[in-house]
Length: 108
Image (cartoon, rainbow, N blue to C red; front, side, top):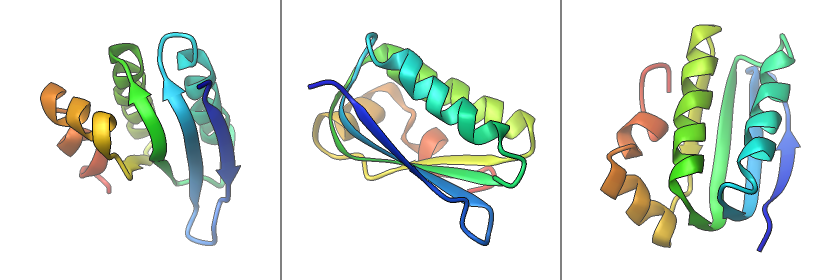
C-alpha cells in the first residue's frame, strides 16, 4: 500500500505533526523527506513529531531517510521524534538500533 501523509500544526508550542499511513520504502522515500523538508521550511516550526502507528512496513531506505531528517532538523536547532512504531516497523527499528535515536533525545 502506498504511503499517505497528513500534516498538522504547528501547535502553539511550535510542534508540527506528520502522520504517515501505508508502507515506507524506496518508492515513498522522496515524498517522506519532502514532507519533512516542507515542515522545516516553516520558521514557526520548532519540532516535528512523525507518527508511524499506521505504517505496516518500512525498509532500510526510509530508516536512513528518517535518521537524515532528524539530523537536518537538529542542524537547524529543531527536534524531530518518531512515535507509534509497532509490528514490523518496531522490529526493524530495534534490529537496526535506531529506536533510541528516532524516539528520544537530544531535544525530544
